[in-house]
Length: 98
Image (tube, rainbow, N blue to C red; front, top):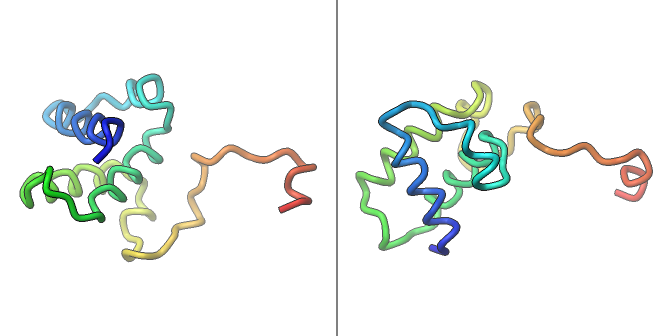
């Protein structure tokens, strides 16, 4: 786990008992809360010796609870494209080249 990834995990654990802290995610990590929690969930999908099973389970529960409703019900391995408000929109000229 990189230092940045570890900082994300530590942030979730530090703020979990307060059920808050989302206003600090953008300034600290440069991510919206939705993107932040999705990335932490993705980190948990890769095996690591740095986190025990109980901590991984707690982190998953916290992240899933923080994500918008439709994302929480998505099956693993699928992408929820209906709630993509956390992505920046592209200028009209860029859309033509995609």
